[in-house]
Image 1 (spheres, rainbow, N blue to C red):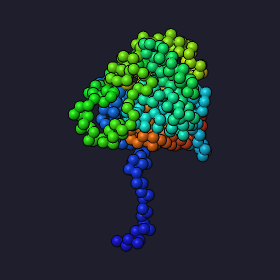
Image 2 (image 1 turned 180 degrees about the vertical axis):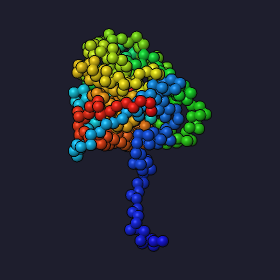
Image 3 (image 1 turned 180 degrees about the horizontal axis):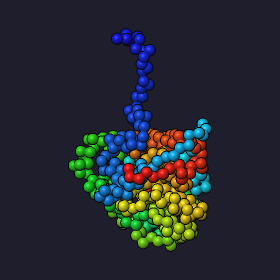
Image 4 (image 1 turned 90 degrees about the vertical axis):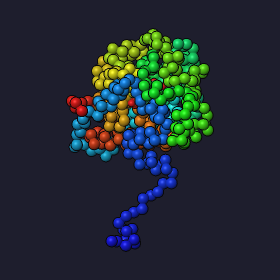
Length: 403
Ligand SMILES: Cc1cc2nc3c(=O)[nH]c(=O)nc-3n(C[C@H](O)[C@H](O)[C@H](O)COP(=O)(O)O)c2cc1C
């Protein structure tokens, strides 16, 4: 047996971080690891609201993830990849990464730091972030937290157009450079986990809530000691279940005419979010959209919807350079992002990936999520044999049959 003095030659003491959150975040090596931390940290109803999708089998989300998992890369190994550059141009302006942070509602429920934390990370990492109409931070507070961030605003159109017009004007005044109109949420999707968990805003006081307080004391302490959770941009519509809110506030009668109306009121880039067919992509571009976001809302609306990634090549070909093609739903790794770009996307968005980070550790958790994805993007590009996003081609990937 070596003596203690000899052990020092064989083993180095690990640097010790006092802060437990920091320690756990540093050890998280993938978005899946952050999801595990998030699950422990957040109450069940909050985690399930974020993690869950629509329908009995949550098939739209599951299929989207399975499709990414079935992609095979075809590298070229004889190129010099000493200087990989992940920067690209999305909607006319630079983004340090080929992914942006998707708009998500109820964000301060995941962690009370909410959108402010996310926009600070977006600013530091130089990637765009979209504030949701269902967000929990006002347009102005969001802009104040990330004055130099690339800010996008996601709009839901509700029955009365006047407040929507007001939001659009406020977003323009606050320096948002892109507006996304979400088209896939005319009625609420069937979020069965939320029904089972009795999710509501504000949370209902039940025996279950008390028990949850005992198992997630930190979340509850934060929740009751910080400003109340409200839909900061939706005056007068601040409580109910997510489904009831969507059904009360949103307009099931939206058509192309509404997109044209919006085009007339928004002078910057306009994105149609939730497009799921070649025909609709053509139509929204003809009505004035600068980009289509192929998305099924992370599987949270129409279950069994098409896998957005699979639409990318056909939509890109049909639009033939008239508009950009963005894609989301099911992205959990930087390799997924690279694959989507190789198939022809001009950019991607991630939703849950950064929300798991937010739940796991507020701003630091979001930063960790973005770093994990960014490192994976750079490493995948290097191993594929490309140094610029523009070098990615469809023949860098193929879809393996089956699993
Ligand atoms: C918790 C949560 C809330 C969301 N809220 C909104 C929203 O308010 N508006 C919207 O257009 N999309 C919303 N989405 C959809 C996202 O913008 C995005 O399309 C989706 O998360 C992408 O899939 P991914 O989570 O697999 O990355 C939400 C998604 C999640 C997970």
